Length: 251
Image (cartoon, rainbow, N blue to C red):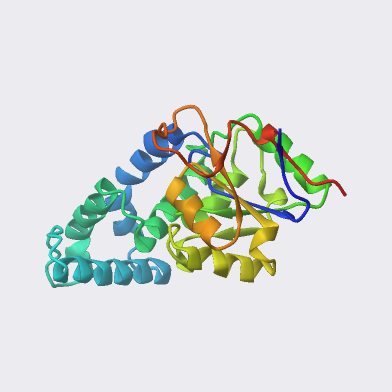
């Protein structure tokens, strides 16, 4: 087992490739949102929260145009007339795997409908729930940092194959706090958790994210799960294949 120093009183976790298989996100969640986005926008375009997401999409689109990225055109006009072109832009963002806050917000709202209808159930690795229970029993705080919106995270953990896991989780963070590959994001998370960075252990399948967390002073573990991309370069982060390899600090 990987011994965790007693100062690690909070475990900060990525989701994709760490808690859930990559295949659940890429083969289930993403396609589910993609085929429903146009209808969802048409049905909900008058809602204030959707209006805010669409305004953010317009702002991001303008940045893409000015930066010469050649996104699909979004002609000026009434919102109702722009749904098709905005849908095409959303597809374009998804095809690039863009960590767009507006896109993630819309996806989260679509997934909420899916979870509530019973269309979706989040697959989590078998060691997740037992580890959560073990960690909480000894007072370890559990927090989540994912590029998916906080809403998407909460809905995922409320509807897993291991049951509702939200009761174990103290805090959720998404890209509203900053990019996952920026050390400042992890500094902000430590501040919001009211902990020193070295009291936090961050686990992810992304070396770039772990590098950023390490630069902020956090402890790190590289998640090696079935289906994850193999790392061919040497990494400085200790590897784990299961949460069973993380030994929680004693009382």
